[in-house]
Every structure is written in C-alpha cells, then in structure tokens.
Length: 371
Image 1 (cartoon, helix red, strand yellow):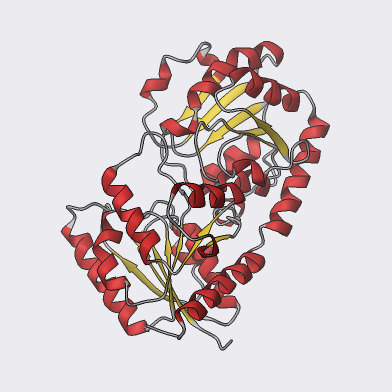
Image 2: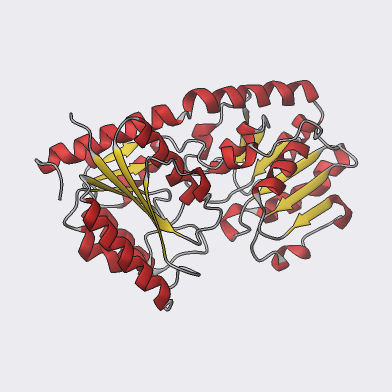
C-alpha cells in the first residue's frame, strides 16, 4: 500500500502519542500531530522535525475555557488542511471529543482506548456518552491488552473484528531515563509508588502493608510520589517515619532520581486497564509488584520481571515486596529481565508496524483513501 497521511489527535497521553507519531513517521508515513499545550508532561522537544506539529489550546482543558475552545477550532482547521487518510484519536474522550465529533465523522477514524471503562471514582454519564460517540465513529479500535479486548467485546456493542490489541509501549520512559546519573544507586530498601494519587490505584492497601514490610525489613521506606489528594491517606500511616511523601507534580529529573534510588516499584491498583508505569520500572531495571487487574499482569512475567498479587490483599502485597527487599540478587536479575522485555516486546518499531496495519485495515474497510 502506498504511504499514507496520518493525523494524531490527542486529548491525553501526550508523551505516548509523541513517541508513536515519531515511530510512524520513521516508517515514511506523513504525520501531523495535534495535541494540547498543557497536557501534563508533554515533551514537545521530543517531536521529530519531520512531523507537522500543531499544539492547541491554552490553560486547562475544561468546558468553560473559551481560549481553549478557540485553539481547538484552530486545530480542526489545521486537520482539514492536512487532509489525512487516517485520524488516530488518543484517549481522553471528554467534552472536547464531543465537540469535535461532528467534524471528525468525515475522516477514517482509529481510536485508542487506553481505558476500556472509566476507573473507580471517575465515573461520569457525560464521559460515558462521549466514549459511546468514539466507539460509534471509529472504524477500528485499539486497546493495550487481551483482557481489555475481551472487556470491550463483553460490555459494549462492538464487533470483534473491529478491536485490536497493540501493546502500550514505553512512551513515557525515555523522557525520564535521559536524566539517569552514574552516581545514583539504590538507597536503603526503598519501595516506590509512582503516579497520580487517585482512588483506583489502591494506595490504602500499600499503607496497610507497611507494618508487615518494616517488621521483616527494618528501615524500609515507602516512597509515594505524585499529584493528587493525599489528605485522605495521611491518617492511614501506622509508622509515619516509614513514609517519604512527594505530593506534587514530579518532573522528569526528579522522577529519574526516585526510580534510581528505589529497590522495588509497586502498583497496588484495585482497578485498571494497563499502565505505562510498569514500563518505567523496566526502563530503570526495577522489579515490579502489581495487582491482578485489567491487562496490567500481561506486562509482567511472574517470577521473572516481578510478582502479581490479588488486588485489595495487603498481606500478599507485603509478602512479595519483602521477598524482593531481602534478595538483592533476585532484584537485579528481575530488573535485567524487565529491561530486556522493554527493549524487545515494547519497541516502538514493532508497535508502529502493528498500528499501521490497523490503519490499512481501516482504509480497506472504508473502501477508499482519504476523507
């Protein structure tokens, strides 16, 4: 098939979208990238020079932000001038997708659902409506795991031929790993919880596991790093001295330091789809302890790159963490295995290849190229 013109329209997951756009462009496709200016950690300097970049909007992405609305209209005009064969939507199906939907129907759409269902604590009838719009308008749908595909087919009226599994990749890894320092090493049995502090990430179960961890490994520290409402968790600390809390936006440089100093990365989620945090752990050669939710375990080779434990089970969580803290050889072996897995299974070259095949299928099913 001849080379195609692909436009990425991102409402979230900007760093992931940038890496995927770069990889698709490296294959020779002509790529445009439209994404919010203020989307978290968006690293616009990482966008390849070959890409037609259009940042849009100012300030927070919210329904009442009229400056954002004007910027978004500009992005839609840019999209029309680019005349893409395929428009790839990246998650975040919220108010702005609903606004854009009538203008996007003329294109061949592919959508990536990073989350098949809304997480615990973030449910919204408005958001569900926009997600319904996205499923309806999309020619093809991408999810990041086999369990997520099964969930999409079981819970929504979507034909099986329309849903494809493409691994998440290491979209957020390189911006952090570039700040690795030769002088930083593991620092005293640190257990790292990294990312947004929200209900579905199960932080309370790590809090409950702390006394069991420090009983077996005196001096162990639980490091919590990320933005979010931490107040509800403060009273859950049995031994406050065992916790180090960075309740703030974590820069790439600070994140790299935290990962290098940590011994184990833990993700005690009670709900979830997949997570780029696992790839971050692998990028820094850290073993991971995750819970059996969504497709997160699909990224972990049990006993080789980490451990998978039941959700809401603080005892099992503590047991897995203690096993790793007590065995430096096992930690290093798992860390090397995880790093190897990241480079082999989650390479952007492979992910771009599979994604382009989804584009080709979308165009073939529509029966023509272009809008």
